[in-house]
Length: 487
Image 1: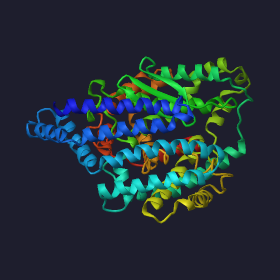
Image 2 (image 1 turned 45 degrees about the vertical axis):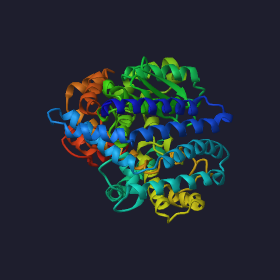
Image 3 (image 1 turned 90 degrees about the horizontal axis):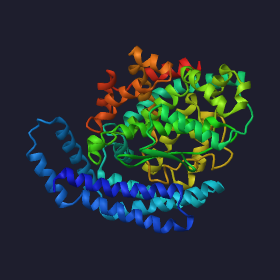
Image 4 (image 1 turned 180 degrees about the vertical axis):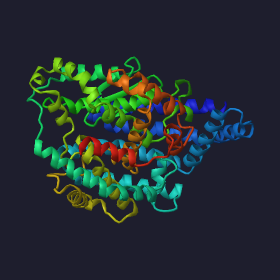
């Protein structure tokens, strides 16, 4: 069996795990959690055994030895498969299975602890996942700090020091923009007309807008969960989730736009290459750029709502009493919220700076798990000026640590930076801007398909950005966007 055939077999196993993982987050009865953890652990172990087997190694070496270099995509696939193989073989299968089981149990413990604002109930699970993360980092190796080894799995080619330097440079401007935007918004105090905004009507509007920007409902669907996410179960099966608030329809709508951005990326990857690097997303920083571009640069724009506000008024008649300018003022409001997923653009990245700093300290051992709530509250007060009223709104609000996703959070701000840079590059074509003004999003999506999606993971993230926009990731376009919208 060739290395590419083996890679596709591995993709079947992993996508099977994604199916039951999606079910775990949407419909699984609570009493079934233990058995589901065992299922996921078995699949993770089976996938790891295949990806680190002698048969895999021999097939990879044979393919590389006979590669002529005449097919750049084949060469890139082999290079990235070699990179993945090296990383995978550094982890014993026992550790992979142990992490999968620990994460499955941790997610259920987190959901319960979050509901009760009881960090102590989740703390032992976080301790276990941190031990596993440090073990993995030691096995992979790193030159700076443990966070480097984990970050490489999400945003290859970068380092903790490089991200920290970028964030340290952004911090003063982000804090100034946030403070000014909050003050400006407070002076106007925009508000939506009172609800209720029925969930059924929200679902209809969300689906209509998701389809308009290009999400293919023949190859995907939207469901309801505690924490919105997007997951890919196969080359023609992309699942989005959101949550609803009957007092504010924009909460679920922008959740759907965000997750649909992820979904459009997954649907745009070469389906025939599913399981190969050329059919896979390159990094979370690029993935997040797609969601942020559609959510914020398209979905929160005046041009977007000039077209869609009449439709929203049909769904929610109370909006008839709210002029478009007042509605936009509400969308562009800025406030220091304790909840990251409900934060506005002007303040969002402050949430990421907080989490990035805490994760580094937890991983290097300078912050004990028991001290996380106090450290969270102290850091939050420094950035936002107040303390969350409980841990449900503080250190328990995100699922990422329960997923074992340490090293993940930095990619959100990297995604914001990339989104602004990509949008600015796309808008250099007047035809794209003209079409968007008429609610035609196909030209923009086609540009993204060609510039980003079609390349899969055959280029490093920074090189992909260079090819698509003419420069590697930089902050200028993002800061300009924030200032133009909020100041």
